[in-house]
Length: 74
Image (tube, rainbow, N blue to C red; front, side):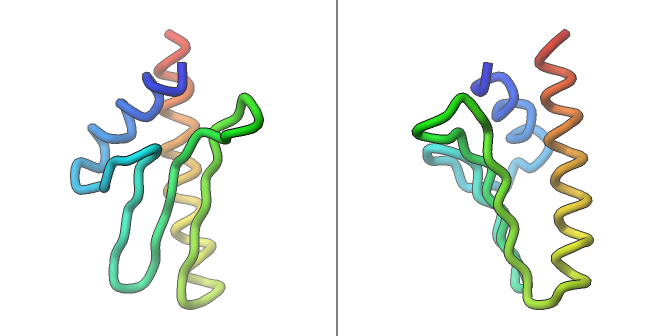
């Protein structure tokens, strides 16, 4: 099931680097979508240079993750 979610996210973010998850990097932040190695969950990690940027990136990528999970359930 995680594979379907990650595939949807890859289509939305085609420039993301793929390894055991998807990594999106820009000058001001990085975001990682990655299945946990110890739990049946998909992790979202976001780092940014400021709190306001972090909030904006987290909102954007958590929305993308929710949409991908909903899409994979169909």
